[in-house]
Image (cartoon, rainbow, N blue to C red; front, side):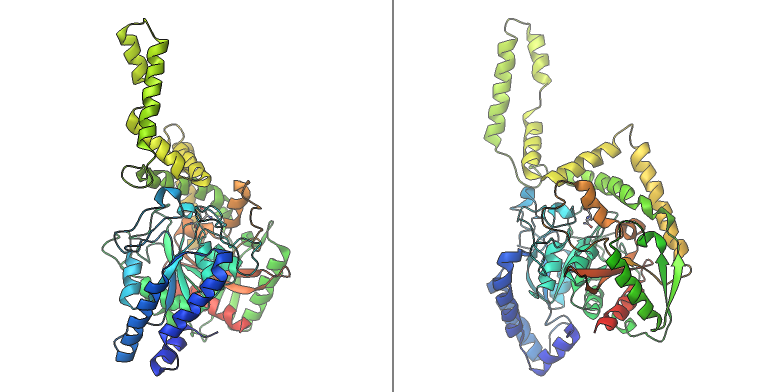
Length: 506
Ligand code: GLN
């Protein structure tokens, strides 16, 4: 498959034009998107205008290094003048007033931003079914989910509606949908890419990263979005590496750790065999397999769902209908309060003024009612569940038992990785325990839904990087992904490993 570097050459030589490429994508969007619902906003005219002006720059020799790249962006990343809904009713009409740093970087490199992609509300979910825009369907088989929460971004690439896309990964939301849809998905090291303009879910986990049709394009996109940003004081000032030239370092032996904990119960047996088979083939390609241990991995899901929900409950407090977001009908709230006051007066007829005043002061004020009603109407079920859970684990009396304990376990998980990376370059695992599941199948069973993240979540807890790369097709016809995790700032290693898997299939 042609990568973006090859496309760029064709554009420069005049073999193709960006206007034609863009029209091609718009046609595919028009024919496929109504069914799979992966893009939730496409500005056709705007895309054509961008194509014309970038094409002119290409012809003048003044185009930026991403000229020719057509990209979709997850609905959680702010793009000026465009609605950033986070797939939530509460932000349904929120138009961003500034560009996220990643958007600014893409625009200044002349990438063409074609549209906005669907997701689970506030990036909470594993299927892209929790969305005010409706579920996204898997382009490979539309009875199945895309995975989530960046399912729209995975699907737009898988369905060839653009070249690449951006997603966000807090517990696996890039890698798991990449695996379910048969594309490449890269979660960079925490702090490698600026979070400025990414609507926060769990700030100590959130990462922006690329989806692509091949490993080279993921490396190219990462190179453009990575780097220190004065607008995000958690972003790293480590220099950005040359991810592309690293891909061809075949002469160096790559040491791949194989953790038994990631190949145990719950893993689909065919996925296990496929991965084992490919690892054997890699051994002929200067890859050395080394058994490693990650004993605390089994606490990953519990730890994540305590810490991420705690952070979410705090981050989502700002959506109250006053500062941001959907505001419930003010008049109705006023009426409700007046009725309740009248009812109190009525029941306490003949009682003292002090008693009546006491009863009046025990009911919610108009402001509190407006907050409650706005949030009740604005948030979906999964988001509410997480706000409740997060508030609970942070509350006095439970804080030590849950939140503080989970922080300690997070450290143990990180220590496991540090130990393992003393002897290996990358760690291999399946990306998810199964292939994509049917739409609706897990919607009433949150725990089952959470289990999809069992192999991806630890990388976010440890802040390290990970990639999912297509490993082939299951006998059920659905894509399977392999994951490589690398130590912090070792994106070159996971990209190198992924490239070797890609070579096996090309
Ligand atoms: N599926 C996980 C969750 O629901 C991860 C989400 C994510 O990475 N944004 O929280």
